[in-house]
Length: 135
Image (cartoon, rainbow, N blue to C red):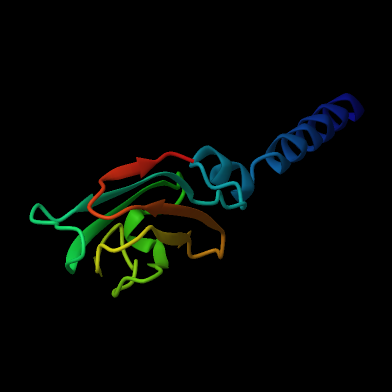
């Protein structure tokens, strides 16, 4: 009887120890969410001038931001930024600003995830010039 008690006690303690390793934290890490948040990373910013762009006349420029955030759906990212000397704001993955095409223009964009993590990039372009930056 004493031997059976030791075996039952040993199995019970062993089961408790094994089960203590199984928690919600393990499930989260297996699904890619370990309780920490990865920040968004801007990998590229491109600017494309309107086809009819002429130096010295107002025209549209499309600013596109490529961003990676492995733990956030792209629809949940927030974009903010501007281009000095141009009207319009950078408020999405693709935004349109209007520039007078007279000089060099400087811009910046910040992408923020719901956890408050962010990445920012500055860029510049000249009149009627297309281009990109890969920080």
